[in-house]
Length: 246
Ligand SMILES: NC(=O)c1ccc[n+]([C@@H]2O[C@H](COP(=O)([O-])OP(=O)(O)OC[C@H]3O[C@@H](n4cnc5c(N)ncnc54)[C@H](OP(=O)(O)O)[C@@H]3O)[C@@H](O)[C@H]2O)c1
Image (tube, rainbow, N blue to C red; front, top):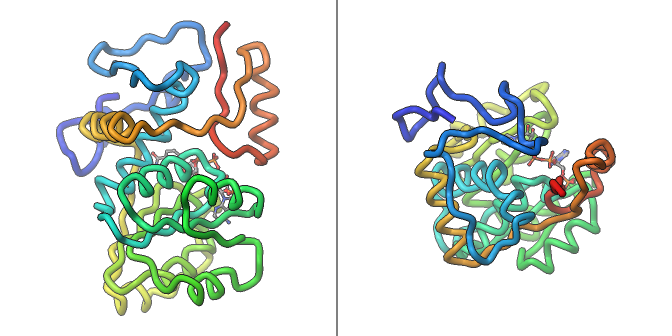
C-alpha cells in the first residue's frame, strides 16, 4: 500500500505491506483501499486467486520489471520450493525463457520438470554450481531469494553482463563475496521488493493472458491455522499454502 510515485522504488516513508506492520490476511474481514482491489482472473478459483498477490507480484517485478527477461534467455531460479520462486518459474516459462532451478529437494525438482523447466540441481550437493555450469553454461538472468553464502556461486554462474535479482535473504548475509567477479563480468545486481500498482496490473495481465494457475500445495481451514504454520515450518511444501475462510 502507498507505493508512491516512482516506478523505481517504493515510497521510503509511506510504503506499508498488508501484514507488515498492519495486521495481515488471516482474518474474516480485511479493510483495504478500493484502489488496491483488482478483479479476480476468471480462470482462477478463490483459493488460487488468494495465493497470487504477494508472491506473484514479487516474482513479476523481480523477473519482468527489474530483470527485463526476454524470450530465449537462460534463467536460473533458486529454491523452487519457495512461493515467489514458483511464480517466477511460471512467468519465465510463459515468457519463453529456458528455465533452470535449484532446490534442496530432488522431489521438488522432479515436480518443476513436469511444469516445463529444462533442468535443476540440488543445492545441498557438493559443487552443485560447478556441475550445473558444466551442464548448462552461464545464465543471462538469475532470480534469488536466499542470499547468504550461496551468492558467490551465483556470480560464478552468471554470464558476463547478466542481471541478478535479489528479492530475499532466507540464508542471511554472506560471510564473503568475490567482488572481482562482479566488476570483471560487468554484472548487473538488482534488488527488488514487492511491486508498484503498475507491476500488479502487469502481473494480473500475464496471469490472464497465459492462463497461469498458481500452484497450491495445501488448503487449510482458518481453524487449522497453526497446523498450516507447522506445515510451512516442515518446508516440504511445493506451492502456496492457503487458509480458507469457511
Ligand atoms: N522483497 C520482497 O518483496 C519479498 C516478498 C516475498 C518474500 N520475500 C523474501 O523472499 C524469501 C523467499 O520467500 P518465499 O515466501 O518465496 O519463500 P518460502 O516459501 O518461505 O520458501 C523459502 C525457500 O527458500 C529456499 N531455500 C532455502 N535454502 C536455500 C538455499 N540454500 N539456496 C536456495 N534456496 C534456498 C527453499 O527452496 P527449496 O524448498 O526448493 O529447497 C524454500 O522453499 C524470504 O526471505 C522472504 O522473506 C521478499
